Length: 148
Image 1 (cartoon, rainbow, N blue to C red):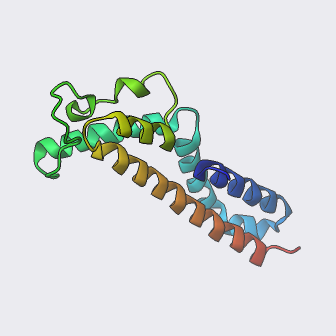
Image 2: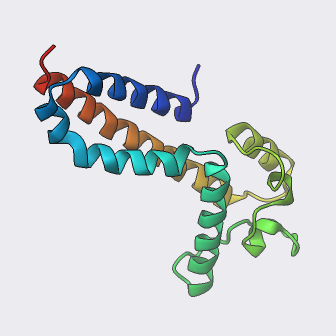
């Protein structure tokens, strides 16, 4: 089974294929949306994209927690040196790949809940899903307005 990232890239490829076969008017009708999707797609799927997303997410959650916008700590473990509690990417992820399996493995071995990791992964997956939905809409418009 393909990962959500791979599914998204597959969907994008099918939209690109449809774009080549569609009438120019159909392509023009979805051009702005497709450009927006392409920019987001590059941001979410380029090499190291999830790591960058995770770093930004952890920093933002740290800021929100310090300002009192969020009441739950980034991690509820008792380790004062916990990278997550301090608002940084855990050492386990600094050199290796990060995916749902590596997050699960880290959380199994970690004393705390690592809330910020699970939340970041959920939000990232949600963004991938929303982008895939937008691609479906563009694909449908190309098919409906195209001349096959």
